[in-house]
Image (cartoon, rainbow, N blue to C red; front, top):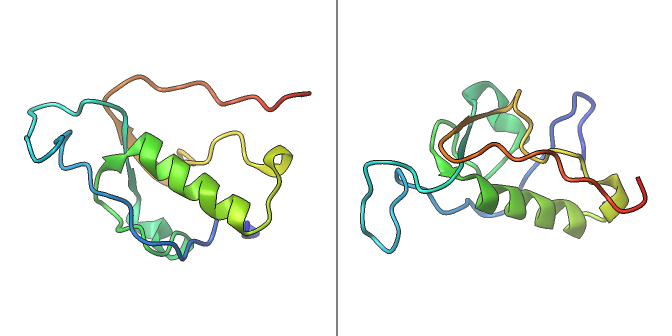
Amino acid sequence: MASDDGGVDRTSPAPVRSDSGAIAGVPSSKPLGREARLRPEFAGKYLGIEPGVWFSAAGLAEQLITQLLREGVSDEELPQRVLDPTHFEFRGGEASAPRSAPGR
């Protein structure tokens, strides 16, 4: 459910932490992919996501899309960018272009 100011209320379980790119418990000095963390001032809009903690951006986006679809949002109504750069900080990897829906 979208809020009036563009945020999305979340009540799903917390995503898996990125821990600076660790895979299968093996720490890495650099993130292996794009990471995102929720800015503290937007924590109330994304329940279940700990602010200030780095997560896999792809995993976090997938979780948010899944939640939106469960809430009844159609594919056509999904936002171009699920991880709003106003609400999230990013690091590592390549920034991806917004996805385009079929027929747009």
